[in-house]
Amino acid sequence: QVPLVESGGGLVQPGGSLRLSCEASRGVFGINAMGWYRQAPGKQRELVASDTDDGTAHYADSVKGRFAIARNAVKRTVYLQMTSLRSEDTAVYYCYAAWIDSGGTIRYDYWGQGTQVTISS
Image 1 (cartoon, one colour):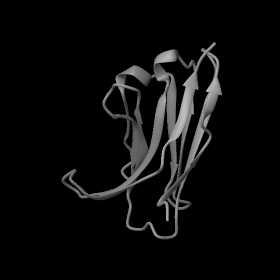
Image 2 (cartoon, one colour):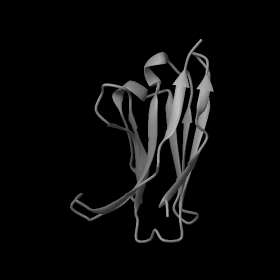
Image 3 (cartoon, helix red, strand yellow):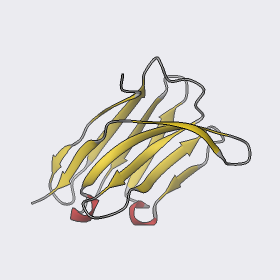
Image 4 (cartoon, one colour):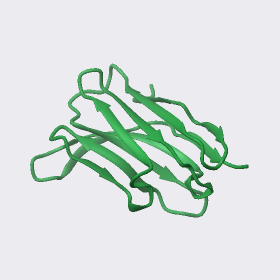
């Protein structure tokens, strides 16, 4: 069973917009953080954006001002609104969920299967 179900990936032109969605399955519980990672060919997987129960959102420098994360802790869903897309945003995007303790340590986590986002003219 896939712990996190993703949707919204696809092909868009440079400057366009795309919205990714993710929902935790019934088997996922005890999470207080959700977010998105991405991995482009030949590059390491990187954190794109995350949101925790304390209300703090984090963004990679490369996407600040262009991407926005929104999480509903009750529905256990997370979204990534991407605008002003560039070719360098092309990657597989992975939904992520975790339990993070008060000291900031990740105790356990869950991953989606990944969804392809391609920006091309």
